[in-house]
Amino acid sequence: MLTTDAPRDCFIENWFTSQFKTQADGRTCQTVDKQSVILFPTGSEFINQKDAFKRFGIQAAAHEIEHVVQNEVFNYEMPDPCWFREGFTTYSVWIETSFDKSFVPMANLKKTTFSNLVTSLKKSNIQVNAKIYENWSNEEWYELLNYHPANPICWGRNKDGTVVSNPIFFGYAAGPFITEKLYIDFGITETVKFIKRAGVLNNFETAFTQTFTISYKDWMIKSAIPWLLSGGA
Ligand SMILES: [Zn+2]
Image (tube, rainbow, N blue to C red):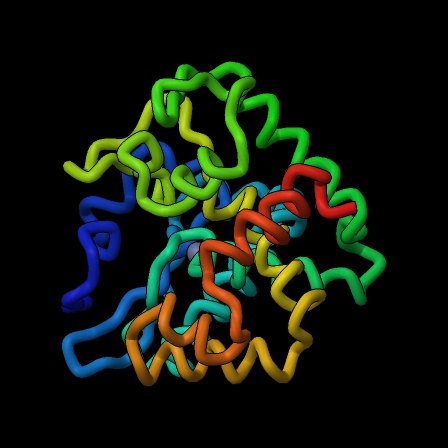
């Protein structure tokens, strides 16, 4: 039996619930002696559906491997916000699979992800600063992407561990666009410097300002959120 000091999602009995039996899913967990391990529900119905696994399972595996890389770079102190944690790994897989014609092209991934995000928001009753989705400014988006109580959704779970109904996976859906804008605005070299610095300082916002000489909030409001809302076009 695997022993971890990771979140409850890493305990197999919590994790291997019905929702994962038919979906591509994995977890990267940390053992008590600071090793990264990747868990997949290999006995699930999903894995037995060969076509489904071909389409989604390989991406899910690559996503989890990216989390291992993250853990190593961040010295196992992976910083929030969630869009960074999940967006970074998701975008990395978009890039990796864009070199292989048997996967979905990057442009389609972006289009589908953005339209799913908007559709989910329209159907949801999420409010930020007492405003519904249609009335949000960049300020509301910023709050939502940074620990707003209405956004417990990085893991698809509420803070008490229950699964959210009608989840909108902001970290996974919005995160890749914001990660992409980091690369566009600052380049890969500076972005890698930032990631390493965030791991050393264990402080996302301080590492951001020190590396990019703009505050995290300013950059989000002026550059990243407009990019996200354009669908990354
Ligand atoms: Zn992930």
